[in-house]
Length: 433
Ligand SMILES: [Cu+2]
Image (cartoon, rainbow, N blue to C red):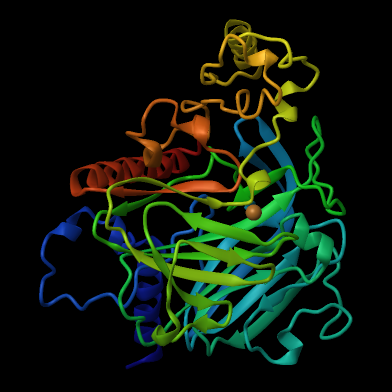
């Protein structure tokens, strides 16, 4: 085959990867597979609320471009922060390659200080290791450094600036290497989630990366209820990949199902090591991969179980306002919350009822004023939340999302809404909106 033809086929394959719908987004999935169609070796990883990094081909080498730059991230309906990220996203876009691929990654520094890039867990030559002053000179502002290596491993890896404070302000992303020999059993859905914590004072937008007191906790750069639920088909096999590059360890708990731990930051774990759990501790610098059969229909929570990681910083809402909780009644609290709702422009804020004598009970309030429903807020309402019970968002805070295990009809309805969203976004783009 001539070089031109070979390039054409390689480029066609790359375009299919870039623009093809993941098989789990296809409504035709319920139809029996045609015998002539070769089975896909794996479904692509979906990183909710984070884009994939596109690539071009130079011969057989996949070429990526990452631009380190400050980025504004609306982590909750009432909180936008100044983080640093890549290509306008924090965490950075997800890189997906196949074991055996040769990759070239241009890292451009649009930060006001020098940076570096480390390929965490990947076995690369020392000059590609990305440690400033040890394996390379720091990448100065305005400079680009090009990394190139062959990925001979499979698994869940990540990339990050090899500088402690830059990691904490968001300079990291996922690096997924799909296996050459497909994993067994095959997963129907494959999701990845980056865990991060932030210390941001009320009325401030810049994280304090030196602080040990974290008040904002995020999955893929968002705090619940802004996190996008993971929508899966009832009866499917689901893989979840968690990556932690922060200061705290996070015990991630799944409701209503048991999973097995099928991999770590070092790759796939042998099946003989799998044992049932429903909580997995994702330690700092680790990846943990779990799999389960989505057997039970429902909207099942998945969240860090550290109590302080299951809340948002309400101080931001209160900014400059006094809410009297120590001497209040249900009606008074309701009117205060309604005023708050108007002021912050969140369509609907409510809390659950409190007893008439609440203020005379030592310990009150605990959660009474933390439950705020904002189902219709910008960034909360989306196809993936379609059909959830009213006020669902009142129970969602911090490092939290849900796995929605849905029967065919509901699953297909949401996938069709997601496709409509993609179409209208493409049209907006086409019309320069
Ligand atoms: Cu946690």
